[in-house]
Picture 1 (cartoon, rainbow, N blue to C red):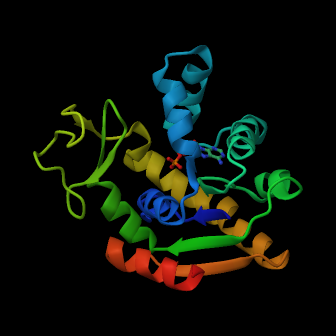
Picture 2 (cartoon, protein in one colour):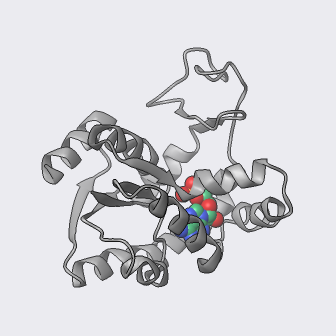
Length: 207
Ligand code: AMP
């Protein structure tokens, strides 16, 4: 089973993706996490990527497609794509190659996104995500998993956040229409609810 999960930043997309992948026994692939790992490696490519990402812009379709293609070819048993496709052009690129069974769209208001982002932190070492309101670490500022310091992502700064929300409405929201048009079931989920309620809604509709 191949599932695509789409939603604006802070919609809880990454959290739900991890839960769904575990529930359905498929591989969770987050393009944002893959790109951040490349940045962290300190490579030349990583330095170029960090400039693009910190400005709240999108990485080129060609580069991201190569990364995604490798991931789904290595996981023929099923994949949950989190963060791809972000544009209709990206959706077209995988169309011939990957049979998409369902699209899950998580819907939240822009104001909710901005409010949630100000409370969002991640582990500086392992990248685990936290939210000081809905998913706090056991010790403030410290990762539960490895004890490393929690930090705020550079692309969670207010200017970058506004740019990413505008990009989402312009470029990513049309991806939903694209899948609807080619006959893939799109499941629209209310992301304003608590994490467990959102999860139950998704599983309830996907079956
Ligand atoms: P995310 O963690 O999904 O919010 O992704 C963080 C950043 O990585 C985005 O703001 C983009 O700069 C980049 N990125 C992630 N996925 C894609 C994609 N499918 N296409 C282009 N850029 C992407």
